[in-house]
Image (cartoon, rainbow, N blue to C red; front, side):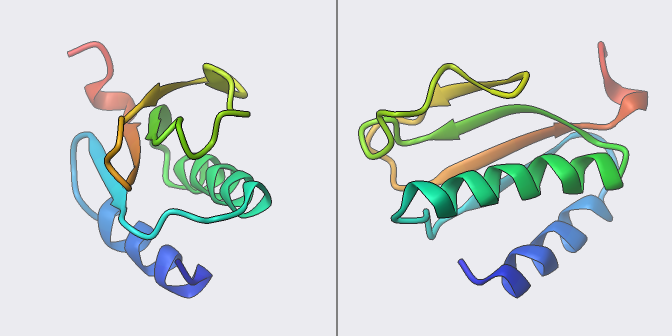
Amino acid sequence: MATANFEQDFDKAFSLANNTILTVTEVPEREEELLKLLERAMLRGFDNHARLTEIHLPMERFPFMDSKFWHVPIEDCGKSPVLRFFFEHPETEGN
């Protein structure tokens, strides 16, 4: 996914209230690209006061990934070729 498209998707998603799930349907092919995308998602969450709380990705394609990215849990989405970011806004955490 092109960086500009990714940034536009974040801007649209974070303008919504409550918790946000962002699905990326063009999963990076290379490890470096994936790590950059995960890092960018975490930073954009911080910028928008929405904590990245969970990541789903196809572990079969990325077996090097551990069960966490920094402090964020990573779950396997199976054969689904998508990447999902789950964000929580502070006012909705714990509800």
